[in-house]
Length: 70
Image (tube, rainbow, N blue to C red; front, side):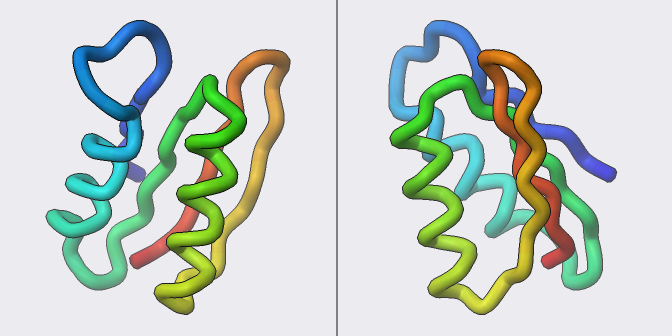
């Protein structure tokens, strides 16, 4: 499983490394994206749903995780 951590200060939107990882992932590869911003989490869930990608949501205090297989 490949983990992409988008938490903490970034010079750009956390969606950029998340979507980049999704685009670069091989078919069948499992990803976990760690997010600390609720709006980014909601936007990424909506994107995955629109792409027909099922996902698992994990909540851990201030961090949220999305796990899915491309």
